Image 1 (tube, rainbow, N blue to C red):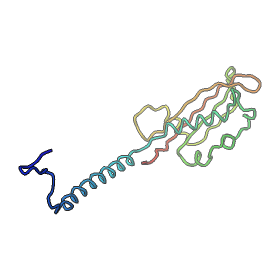
Image 2 (image 1 turned 45 degrees about the horizontal axis):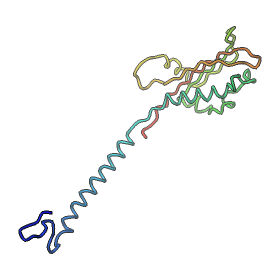
Image 3 (image 1 turned 60 degrees about the horizontal axis):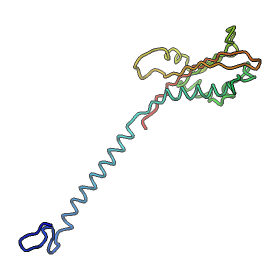
Image 4 (image 1 turned 45 degrees about the vertical axis):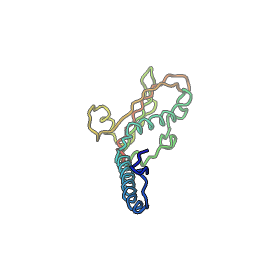
Length: 171
């Protein structure tokens, strides 16, 4: 340890006068640094935008596919099936919200005869699915083609197109 000529430690304050005065400024300085770091971290975290359009479109298509197909077979009541009630989809959010779109086409894989067809939402989103651009205002889409069997064993082609343009907000 460093000592002066008298053999005392240099860091030893003899009468201890003023030590709290000097430490106060250092303590406030450290508090300001910690406070500033916390404020900066919160600002960085909450200024990020979340774009979940692709994930929403994917979730919607999986939900529709799970609703229509059970263990490789299409629902028995598919001809007069109400997709909103049967798949627990919010009709108002899709048709009047202006943020979502889906299209379901079920047809015989061999003859091409249409078994079931339903589309709802903003039809323009289906066109936006095929436009390749870096524009952030276009809808993000998911396109699924599945095969399943009808109740009488015929092979059915199921084409599901879903789109979302719900841009999300800052977190």
